[in-house]
Amino acid sequence: MVNQGILKDTTFHSVIAEYSILRPEAERHKRKITEELLLTALIDAFSILVIFLLMNFSSTGDIIYLEKGMELPKAAKSDVLDLNPVIKIDQGKIFLENKEVNVDELTAALIDLKTKYKEIHPGKEAPVALTIQGDRRLKYEFLNGIVLASSQAGYSDIKFAVVMK
Amino acid sequence: MRKRHRHLDFEVNLIPFIDLLSTCICFLLLTAVWINIGAMNVKQAVGGQAVEESTEKKPTMWVLMRETGDLAIDTKDASIAANLQHLTIPAENGKPNLAKLGEALTQIRSLDARVVTALVQPAAASFYEDIIAIMDEVKRVGFVDLGVAPL
Image 1 (cartoon, rainbow over the protein chains, first blue to last red):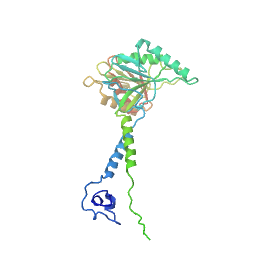
Image 2: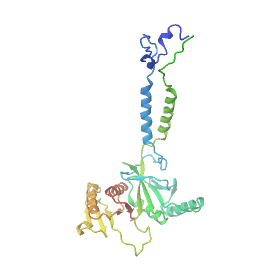
Image 3: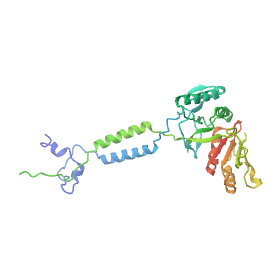
Image 4: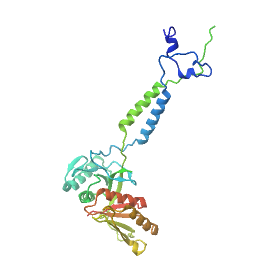
């Protein structure tokens, strides 16, 4: 059907075939009803997008979840965030691994976390690092209780979550 | 006999390639992290480890944050001039003056490169972002071990 009639000269033209040195077909077709999409530009754009997104890809994104309205402090000389127990301070409340705890009960909760870790991983040392996630406008008098509790529970390495500059 | 024409010019079928790229873009857009979160690693400054008497005292620098935003720098056990052992950096618009802090720390480090431990003692009213900014500046100058002291 396509080889006969008007469609023969008006549809299914290849852009490369039209400009071929060996068998140029550009001269044959005077009129075109349908235009072929130039896919090269589309693939270029897609490739640039993929490269950009791959460069932004981060596997550590799900370690902490930022609540709406929470702003972390910024730092240029920060390290990579590891998977550790997270203490979150949100609207004056303290959350240990997303479970609300009182500051007076924090030491006990952290020791309990260590005990559970040892039960699950027998023969392995419990981690001594924890991550603190808090808003940049917090005052140290609030953080002080957490720093003290973590020290008392044997967590000597404190990692303050920051936004990389 | 009919002569067979072999096409020397051929087109690569780009549709599967576009499909693959579209799938990649969808996946990467869904899993993209637009905010890069890092960690400022510090140690508990006081009462962390048992004190050994035979251990040689390491030169240590304390940064004391005042409620007014002023900073007091005390360097202990370092071989630096006496006038540099106790420094005060006045606040700038109620905030710690990080530029002056950086200059002072660079001077201390240039006189005694063994000073790599810095301990920050914030005041009760010190803002978390100011504490992190000071730690960031201290790290930038070349201090490796950072600690934070409780109130």
